[in-house]
Length: 229
Image (cartoon, rainbow, N blue to C red):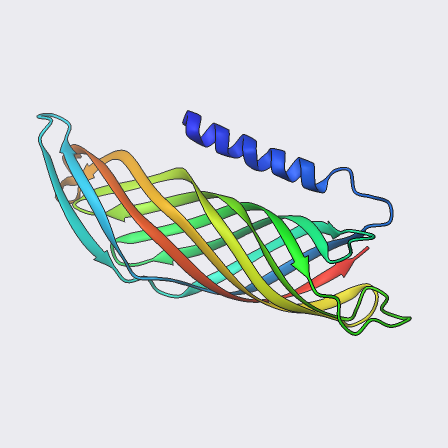
């Protein structure tokens, strides 16, 4: 793991620790699970291949058109007491971004700062029953990549990114609610590893290096269930 990634991971966990512990006794804790679809915008990868035996390099660009995929995740957090419209959470999720040349599975860790508007307050729902909300924060993207740009790579990498949310939550009772959410994620994907030249992978295993990069933006449509405690 590179020093940059170590710093990113440490920063994410520090934000999570500052936001999630200790939880005030009068705060509204919650645990959510969600699922839906993810659509990654088509993107052009820039890559450079290096012949490990001669040191010669060749560059290129490859347009990738991603298929839609499933997006799954969950988060735990709490809303404040006196400031019951402000909250924090720690979110984990997974989704894919796949094409003929690129097959990527993402695992994300996101500490989120959340703001909601408590509507329809009543005796039974003192914190409101309807809650439009927004959330956002940094994210760590762990991605498992199978890439074929003339050099075949199958490896795991780490990159920082951003995670933004907007949705609406409806309380069915004091303990359960349902929500619908739009999510936007962005990561500057970096792939740097050694692999085999495509035409020789099954036999001679001629080795070559590959550096590839692209800026990936993904749109998620999600629905979920929240347990309050």
